[in-house]
Image: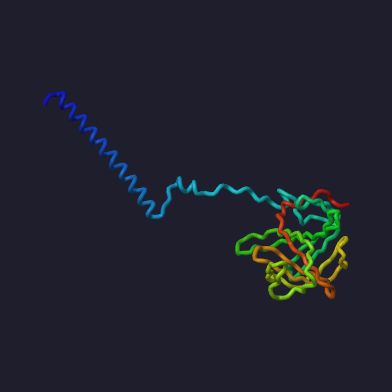
Length: 224
């Protein structure tokens, strides 16, 4: 065998060894990936890609935005882009639960009530949250709140709470300074709220509620 032939054969053998090594390495990697997929494991790159984007902070009451519980009679607030004067307030209590309702006047004689209440979490481990509701009077044509489902304007409302709350009034509320208020609350399957209220011995009045985020209430000026 000539030297030239020996060199050519040596190079051919080396090339073959490199090709076989690359083939087996690729086969091992493919098998490992296939085993991971079958075992339910997900490559790290896929896990990172599946992570949802970070959600913006919801803010902290009293730090990132004013605490609605600090509203006082005589304040001017902005709610849903409408400036209103706080004419009066009712401080209510029922079975250890306390909440406040503010009577708002936007200057058009359209009076609304803004209720503020700290609610417990709906499930175990869920932290308490601040519930803010804007109540608007609605006609119910003399309807009396029953303990069963009510149908108003084609919407079925299911009973939630019912009782008699003690209250103390401040400012202009069209209510006595102190008294007892009967109430009956209802909720529709889509989350809408309906509430009936009356001073004991008086006629029922009804309201629809619209939930608001606490941070949407702006306290513009403080009353004197």
